[in-house]
Structures are given as structure tokens and as C-alpha cells.
Amino acid sequence: MGVPAGLRAYREIFRIPGTGGFVSASLVGRLPAAMLSLATVFLIEAETGSYATAGAVASAGALCYAFVVPRLGRAADRIGQRRVLRPLGLAFGALGGLLLLAAWLDGPRWTLYAAGAAFMATMPPVGALVRARWSHLAGSDASLVASSYSFESVADELIFVIGPLVVSAVVLLHPGAGVAAVALAGAVGSLLLAAQRRTEPPVIALPAGGGGGALRVHGLRLMCAVYVCMAAMMAGWELSTIAFADAYGSPWMSGGVMAAYALGSGVGGLWYGARQWRLTLDRRFLLTLAAVVVGVAPLWAMPGVTALLVYSLFSGFLIAPMIIAGYSLVRQGVPPTALTEGMTWLSTAIGVGKAVGVLGAGVVIDAYGPRWGYVLTLACGCASLLVGALGARHLRAMASTRIVRAA
Image (cartoon, rainbow, N blue to C red; front, top):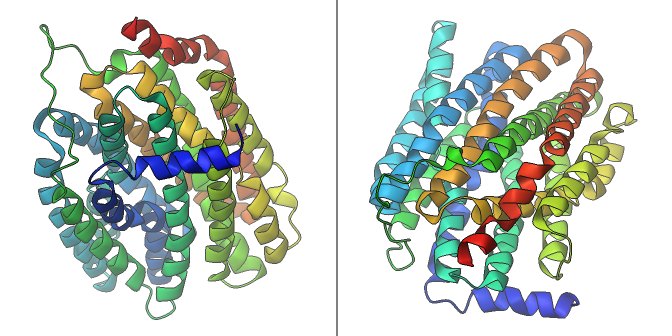
């Protein structure tokens, strides 16, 4: 079907009672996902003068987040989202202030690592929690699930347009302003989302024997491996872009490049959700992943920041479709009793990948410059595609699991 039918599908999801409230809250609560790494890099680089140190702090934080977030997802499945979000949002806001103090007091370097790790580890996993709400509200209506997940990816990209621009603007006032804005947005958004009781998924009782965790699904383990490499690619791209703008333009220009990339992705997400697809989910995921990797191939040869910005509008077109297909595979293949946990395991994989990517890119950029950072970015992307292709049969099994379960 054409675009008009798809746009009507987007309208249908907002006829579900209570969606406006939790969507509005989530738009605030997910701002840290688009701002945290960039704000931390700006702060640490301004205080230490080293991208390698900034990358190492961000890497430590990403690793701690990767360890914590699946436990937060499991807790949300077991005790409910509200009881997780309230203390988590307050802790995130307080630890943002602690990171600022550690940077400004110019104490031992380990205090930066400790404060940065604690701050990033408590970032509320709003994206996974909201997708779990959509899954609960849509029930067995596959078209509503597809439309809501597409909307979520477009909303993510909208945040990734706004977030880098906000960080790039506020750090002109003070290097620590970005971290302060992130901490405030995360705390406020979490408390607002926790207040939306009407749309909160119910706690689902475990079957006899406990039912096992989400990682018992082979396909989810494979997807986590793919996401580690993919997140390393994106983290390398982000840090390389900051360094590229610094070397060939001005540091604030990196926010414009990132916004252009996210804008292209948002348009791609709208296009994806407005179509009826005949390709299976696993094939869609692999094809869009391949297109994204191809998109980062020429970055090392960009002549300047303006060319990079224009190219980013087009190269990011299939990011959102890839994310939509990935989360849809998780919904298909993971038991309903572990849905939030399954989605947060992807967040864990992203955290590990970011840690690897930002640390490796920081070292490469300091030693050889941002163009070689883009070469490392491409290598990580190729690794993600190779892992996905080698495990294609597991992805195929995930795509058909819910159909088999329903039968």
C-alpha cells in the first residue's frame, strides 16, 4: 500500500487511550540517549584536552550501563515500570551533578572515571520501556505493532536531531552545561513516565519453572553480537565526527552533522512504516544493516565538514528501518514474560559496543587523526554485517517464533 495508508496507521496508534501522555513523557526522558555521550566528551575534553581520556570515560560508563540495564529490564517485567523509574530518575539526576563536581575540582583522574561510569550506568532505558508499553497496548494487532515501532524509531531520530544541537549550543555557554541538561532531562522524563499508570504494562506471572531469561533465545544472543559491532561503528562515527569537525571546521559543527544524519534516518523511518512489506523481518534487518554499513564507507575521504553534513542526510536514511526491524525481531522471538528484558539486552549490547568503539576511536584519532577514525568505524560495521550473515538462520527462527507460538 502507499504512503497515505501508512500515515493513517500512525494516526490509529494515537487513538489508543493514554498514548499522548506517555509519548510526551518519553520524548523528554529519552533525550539523554542522544546527548549523554556527546555532552560527556565535550566536558572531559575541555577539562583534560584529550579525546583519548574523554573516550575512556565514556567507555567506562557504557560498560557499566551494559551491565546494569538488563537487570533494570528484568525488574520492570517483574515489579512494574513505575517502581523502577522513580528511584532511577532521581539517582541519574544526582550523579550528573557528581560528574560535574569531579570535572571541576580537578582531582585524581580516577574520580572522572568513577563519576562518569556511575552517571551513565543509571541512564533510564526509556526506549525499551516505551516499546514494551506499545507492545502491551497493541496486543495481537500486528499492524498496530508495526506502526508504533516505526513511530518510536522516528521519535528516536527526532531526539537525535534535537539532542546534539542542544548540546552543541549549551556547551558554548559552559563545557559542563551539556551534562547538566542531560541530568535534568533524564530525571524529569523518568518521573513523568512513571506517573503514566494507565498505560503501564501489567506484571506477567512467570510460568511454572520460572520460564528462563530472554538470553535463552539463540537469535537474541546473535542479535546482541551484531549490535555490539554496530554500536562500536556508531560510537566510532560519533567521536570521529566530533574530531573531524574540530580539525576541519569548528567543534560546534559536529552537532549539525549528527542532526543531519538523524534527520535522514527519521525520514527513512516514516517511509518504512508507511509501507506493507513482503520481505520477512530477518531479511529486512540484514538488508538495511548492509545499506547502513555501505553508507559509512566513504566517510574517510570527505573533503570537509559541509560535504560531510550533506552526505549524512542520505547515508543515515536506513538507520531507523534497521532499528525497527531489530526491535520487531525481538518482539517476535522473545517470550512475552521477558519482553522488556529482551529489549534491554540490546541496550546492553549497544553499551558494550559503544565502550569498544569510543575507546578504540579515541586512541586512533589521537594517534592518526579523524580520517583513520572513520576507517575503524567502517571495520566495525563490516564485522556486524558478517556476524549477522553467518547467523542468518537464527534470525529467521526469531522472525517466525511468535507465529508458531500463536498457532
